[in-house]
Figure 1 (cartoon, rainbow, N blue to C red):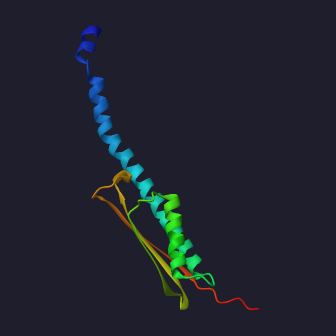
Figure 2: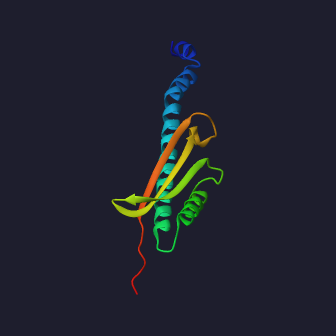
Figure 3: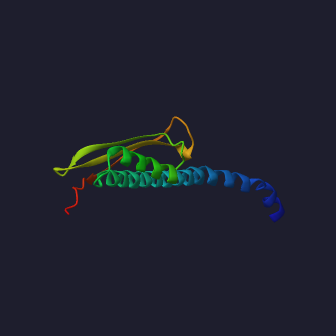
Length: 133
């Protein structure tokens, strides 16, 4: 009788594998997408803050801050990453300073495509005044 019951369950492992895969695959892909978006967001936020600080140093300028943001993003992410970078003078807490804004689109699982996540991060820094002699 045990032989007959085993013959009736032939192929059940394949069905079980497919059913479990239908649940686990989207879960794993969702975790990977979340990790990618968080990595890109943190990298862009760091680059924006550093670019604003670079522009705020005495004797520097907004174009120098823009170049610093581009350099940091190109070094950490793909050079062809679709993004908009803006560094401009702005008031920071009532004091003169600089603001760096970085926008980027992260495709699903890092692939280029229509669907994805749009990120916008902002970094601020108060401008340095000339050093006293």
